[in-house]
Length: 186
Length: 186
DNA sequence: CTCGATATTGACCCAGCGGACAATATTTAA
DNA sequence: TTAAATATTGTCCGCTGGGTCAATATCGAG
Image 1 (tube, rainbow over the protein chains, first blue to last red):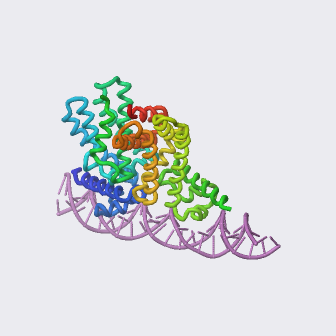
Image 2: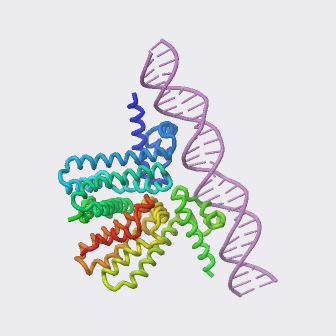
């Protein structure tokens, strides 16, 4: 049975993510993660061989959650414009687009430049975002323009996430969606 | 004479910023900062009463450098559009818009949610950016639209900085300027 | 020159960290 | 039932970090 260890791992990742929201990258320790999960520090290192590996898996999982949300919306999309809307709204899901979550994400981002594995995951995230956007943009404009547009949208989305992380009340989900929608091609 | 202590402080801030670029937030220690400045750890705490205060002053100063660049360009601007261009190009100065600097900035951002002083500085940065943008936008559109536009531009600029921090070769200065210019009002 | 202020060092403290490990409990398979 | 595998704990360790402090050097004003 693989399930039991997978469940435990799952719990620990979730606990780590919660601690990351509360304490940031500098304040997150293995002991706090263990306490949050109601376990001992030893068990964390039993499932994740190092703190770095724990963070990597946390980032991977957070990414999967977001991906699933976007996919769900993409599956209901018919037109290219629907696809763009799906990506945008999926990236601002009310229960994900919250200040604490943005802060946790920001903390992980800050580690990216010094952790090759995190960097790989980050690259995959951007690549998927790019391809999702392209599937909506390509039918609407020349390929080279579409590429630039995709980068622009992607950066704006990230920038808005960053903003919510830095200033909790600075922007609402509706504003966020409107802001990104406003730069879509006519 | 105040000058000598001010010079020392200046050196230490610069050293701290360099270490921050190399090592990120988690890898930056008082000893490394001292070593980078060719001094002892004690002297760092002599001038800055704590690590947190050092970081705050580093962020303040980095912000001042950027501000001066933008101001310089703003002073040469005549039309509202010139003002917008000044802000945009000032935020992507070739020697400031580099991957290591974006990474250092990102590291400081990650601390903002858990450091009230950093948060205040960050708020001031955003406020100035907003007002700079408004001085260019207000003549071009209704006030309420201008406010939204200013937020959008500001988020896009941050998002592009973030992108360069996460992926060193992902975007050039020219691309960055073009991307932001592309969302200006007609 | 002298004295008070300031600059600077290096030694010290100790809390907390990531990680290793041996000991024990629990589960699973045969 | 039993043995192997796995899960879990608590302890231990070495080290590094921020911060304190007393001692010394340097400097600047009178």
